[in-house]
Structure formats: C-alpha cells, structure tokens
Image (cartoon, rainbow, N blue to C red; front, top):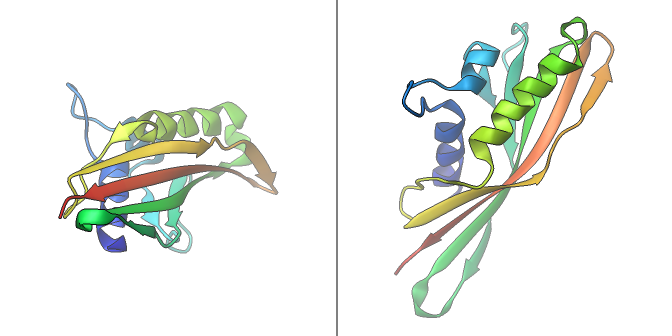
Length: 140
C-alpha cells in the first residue's frame, strides 16, 4: 500500500506539467529530487523527501483510506541566499498543495500542505522542511 502512495508523491514532484511541459521545482534544483537521501557529494540545491508509514482506515462496505505524512526538505548553499531557497520552497508548495494525484489501486488521492518550511542555516548550507499529507481512498 505505501508503495503506491510513495510513487504518487514522486510522480507529482517530478512530473512535467502544464502547457509548457516543464516542472519549476525540477528546473530549480537541476532534476536533483531524491527519496530518503541524496547521493554523497550531490550538487546543491537539491530536494530530499521522506514519508512516514501510512495510516489505514477501514470503513463499512470494504472502503479503505490511506493517509501518509511526508516531508520535503530543500538544501542549498548558504551563499545562494535565503531568497533562493525560499523560491525553491515556493515551487514545491505550488506543485503539491491542494493537488489531486493519481494513486494506483485507489479511485482518488489528494495532497495538502500541513506546515510550510522556514529557512534554517546550518553552517555552509541552508535547509527548509515542509510537511504535507497525502490521502487516498479506494472503493471495494
């Protein structure tokens, strides 16, 4: 079950969208979007997203709802400036918040923002963590 949820999040983060067929988040980080952790010595900026195990709710008639919280972490060099990291976070927010997603095996899915990240300096780097929730429901 969680594989379908994770695939829906990854697809949304990396999909080319709209009339231009581009993805502003991918463009801003040079296609460096990773699940769980980035490869060692990866160039910055980059995005790493992690997901908690989904909660499963079962209802009468065999319907099931999955709800999972995931965090999108954006990393950049401190000398790039706060505005640079904030712009990338804005792309991630615009791409994910209140968006319907396709989840294999479920008839509908949606992603909502839970908490927007603020920039946290960490030596030579900056980081921003934003939290989202994905919900998928299925029919029997």
